[in-house]
Amino acid sequence: MPPVNFIHETAIVDPGARIGDGARIWHWTHICTGAVIGENCNLGQNVFVANKVVIGNGCKIQNNVSVYEGVILEDEVFCGPSMVFTNIYNPRAAIRKMDQVRSTLVKRGATLGANSTIVCGVTIGRYAFVGAGSVVNADIADHALVVGNPARQIGWVCQCGESLAENLSCVVCGKKYIRTAQGLSESGL
Image (cartoon, rainbow, N blue to C red; front, side, top):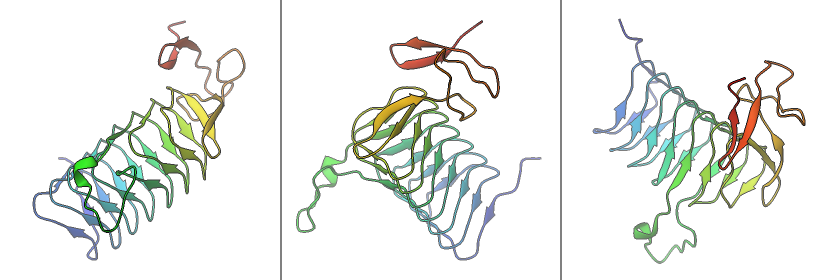
């Protein structure tokens, strides 16, 4: 028997939104028509999920995050508290620009730290780690550790989330990595 969804009584789920089995939707969250949320996701308090957003399986979105149209989260993405996505590069209140939405792709297993800002139109690589408060305005490689404003790479992280040693191995879980065109990939050794 599949896990039962939990949707708090204060949450709003518009007709036409799709929510996978085992999802947990907490207080004052709003999921718009056309949004797709995968299985076993956890959406914290005061989360907004716009129309046409796709959220993969096993994602965790902490309190006060708005996921705007044009954002795609692959499986097991972590969005820290109050982090920010944008979807229009140069918005104006008096000019409707929804025809200028720039897509943002966050690949499998990435972590977006608390209060980080993701400027629209970027791709964040698999298992990348964006430090708290960082402003991402360019693509991030697989397994890259980035911090600052604008975000700059300062190291590499393991799939388990720990920083890698200079030889690209993890002292916590023992995984080893090799450099690739996309960043890092787990070594078959």
